[in-house]
Length: 253
Length: 242
Image 1 (cartoon, rainbow over the protein chains, first blue to last red):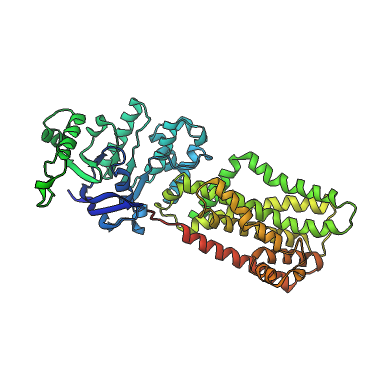
Image 2 (cartoon, rainbow over the protein chains, first blue to last red; image 1 turned 135 degrees about the vertical axis):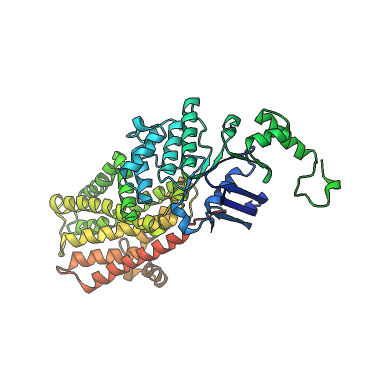
């Protein structure tokens, strides 16, 4: 399987604070990759670097064979920010049609995206009058409207009820099956089980990069929540990570 | 095409905000009416002041509206999102220019109609030139508002850029004290402020039946200031942020 996204030795500082410390990973094409980790661990920063809106200090991010942020990638990539970024003073339909028009697409595609996120009945309501969950789905509609080859979704299912979450994941799976590469950040472990691969980030370092089954196996538990706790504790108590250098004898507690 | 879709999107946002549209049309006409009764006993003064106000209102109002609109694009994340799409920076900036230019034309049209038809405003030149200069002023206000929004982090700050960037231009444009009577250094400052030329162009329309060379030169200077402000504003739109 070819890789859609390659991140090599990525170092990002936000303000004076280092957020990612030399992170490397490869994301295969046509897959759904879950990005997990505590808040403040660097998930959003990694996603921003892949989209190409993050100033990076060193390292490279390659998307579909081009450097992240390349002008030619702009029609191939969709990005859902954590806070809904849609116009509150436009209706759901007007938002979707505007973002569709930016990709040269028409009203039919826009209306289909609104249906796909379950907002067909709210299509003529102003986004500002919607509930938080509906608002984030309106934002999602604008990200998937162009059926991009690479789709970066920052917590797309927060605040959605279980039925909708299930439907949205079916959508994500459908997009991956038609060849799109998805990176989805989440806090919900039951969603992590639906991913092809998982990346677990903690304090700017990658502590797991594998299939959900392999992550569970390496932690010796069937429960992903427990598996992540085990992996985090294993790292925190000084078991040298594979990339550690020769100073393992002086690992701080 | 993206440019026109962006213009349409901004006008649609405006249309959903009925109160803002109503105020855009009503406020200048009410203020002109107030001026009319204020100067009731001083013949000729209303003609002088109302003419300049027809150009100044759109400048100030569009400055405020655009700086808030652009600040919203920045703070709600829509700007960052737009810059990840195939949209070019110029599509966005000229989209704002066209949309608010249309809004300004409607506003100046209503205000001028009231001033000429009901308040007996008298100018030597044609009303069409007054509307033309008023629209150019609105676009100037819009361009400066786009630029100012880059230096504001909150709405409170954005609103206060109005007294910083707009009021000095108003004070020094020759409306309150004729430019010839100002101290040399004040005149020098006045010379580099674009609103000075907009006001001079309006005064030319007031004084001469046919458009003068000075009027066209002043109009071109205002248009040039718009381009400079838009280019500077484009420089503040960063695709990558820290």
